[in-house]
Length: 231
Image (cartoon, rainbow, N blue to C red):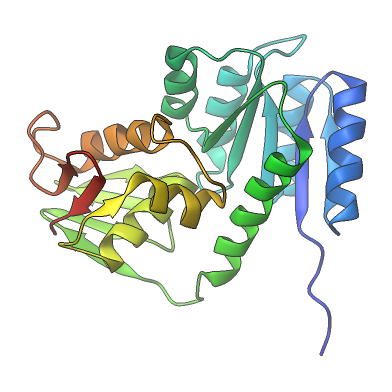
């Protein structure tokens, strides 16, 4: 049996030491790493090479990561994007998720934690079968293969982690799923109960799925625990 081709990662980062460290860590794990030092170069490489994961710095010499993320999402809705930044404000993280980032790592970070997130992404990608899988949530039709959600004849893109959260909640529909379990199963890392990562994604999903996202009927909060899906 042939060995699978190496997974490809594009690092869009202008700090040479950071690029070197990330490259060494990921290549040690058998990944193929490309890099770009500016936002424009990163957009061009993402378009031409179609990497399977993008690591994107927020502060770049020619633009910012938010704009780069938006432009990449205009032609590639599915590639997972992890945003790197020195900022830790909640509003910055929410903005990153709103423009299409899938994860947010604040500098400084440990190589071990970073690699755990990368490995978790590729594990979940490998578990995705080749068949098209469509689920219905209320009046919405979610295509888990194409990463799209259709509601009232309007089709919206879904990011990698939005799809993974919906898949997990749908597998356990009508049952509460804790934030910690969602983090561990999807991100592959432990997280404290105060971590807002899952909550931010739930807000995004409710805006796409619910008729009234402030009074949800399908993605419900289980207070003190997490969330449950009522299709």
